[in-house]
Image 1 (cartoon, rainbow, N blue to C red):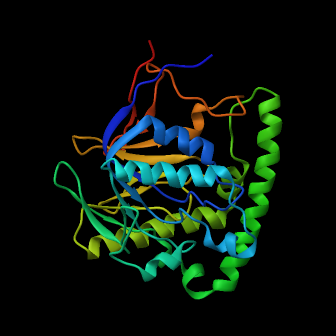
Image 2: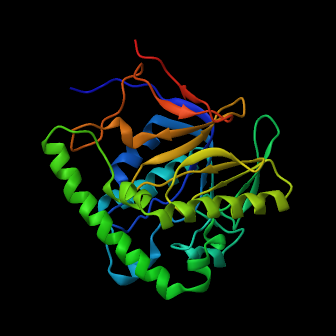
Length: 282
């Protein structure tokens, strides 16, 4: 039975770490999300295409094409789309200022909200010591992450059969490791310091697949998360407030994503970090 939906219009949409070309990329969830949200501007905050994995073995199913075509279609219809490359799609860093099918490429940018606040937007790998100084170790970590994702796929299939909601083993495992938790905290501090050096109010990044909105030493730190584990994105409303949208939590036992009914609650975080419900259930 199909569910009637209404489109939600927002000022800006921030998405990162889709990893197209990886078997872990949840292109069906992302397409569902992009059908529901219409934005004046979409900012792709890095690692949209996973060049590292594509170099190892080519994997590009129809879902990857569908995501690319959906973004290009939005660009043709007037949405401004800015692509800020990350470490997995670093080949695009050779083309700053270029346009591809209406999509602009930029290494980083200063974004101004509707209420005149300024945010530094960048992927964030520049501040990951492992990526910058030990590329081989980074590749090994990437391989280990692939293994965790593979386990995640199997467990997700079992949970669907049991009628349980979507849950990410890889995200859970990462947060059980004290080292990883410490790394996340240090990463946030370093990125916030870069924002302070740029004399802005906040920073929006991706890279570490840990979606959060919080105050870090006086800087509004926003991480958009990813589309291989949590399936999260950040939206800016027309009043300048931000919300962290946890799209992955919308799916239960269904093997295919479904769009939400108009009155089903959508949870997010406003700019001050308070948990809010965007819509109330009937």
